[in-house]
Picture 1 (cartoon, rainbow, N blue to C red):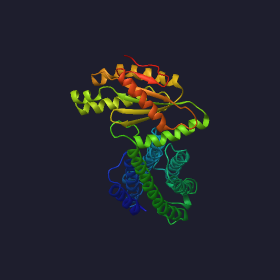
Picture 2: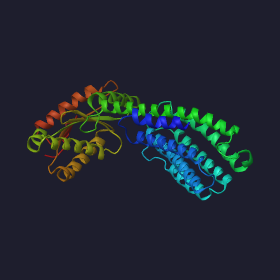
Picture 3: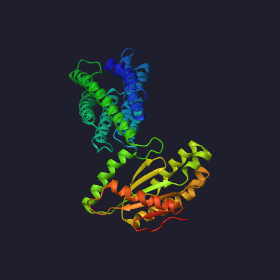
Picture 4: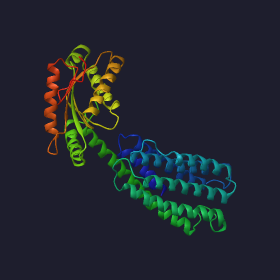
Length: 378
């Protein structure tokens, strides 16, 4: 089992390549657990009960428990949770400290270590059973199965060591519980590494999908993804007979920004514009970089709601542009509302584009809706 863990620790580092935080935590977790088992085996080569035994055994428990805590963080991140659970790592620290302090009592240290490891495993299982925040594959249930088996054999070893010590004299005794633990551990180690690789693959697939659907400069949706999601959003709105508005926005005099300040400043202006669209949005809106300095947005609500949004965005840019870029940012826009159940995103875009063109002809820095109401500033 130790050789398997060592091999897998090396393999994870070799095959994953450049990885993010979740994969790094998984790599560290497997490496620490492998180190823990190496130290535990090494403790059998020194005088039992001596300081070398205490040191090696305590460090081995730390490696195994902290490694499991690192894996718990990786699993939370792969499930899309930003605020990862820290309790498994706290248990690892408490378990290691208690193990060292109570090392002279074999029943205590065996019961303490295995009991808290069982609790640590249980907390990871509970976290995995919670609904993920991102789509994940079946690796989650493979991990749950593996961890439940580990819980059962770890708990059995803890009970035997704490309360039936004469039947369970040490970790290397040929006791059925030790043999069952060794067999289960070998199987679950393989299951766990497969689950980790599948989780890493899932995350890579999600990242590729994100890159394929977002604009590389601003992080907003690209046109293809926006049209696809926008059609679904419109169909949902029509089905529930809820108001929906489309807004087409164009940064004023963007070419002058590029020519005067350079393309890097132009990119910063685009990013700031999208940041503002997100910041004043309230509920989640569907925002897209439609092309160049042109942006489109679908917003749930009627004309009154989107007019208020337009006012907030202009006020935000008036304050943020000089502060962040050293220049004023303004835009022209056109607004189209859903007409009926047969309306389409493409038709709304055409109407909004016509209004945007009119806003530019009238001198830019203004917003027109289909009722020909001017909402911007001259």
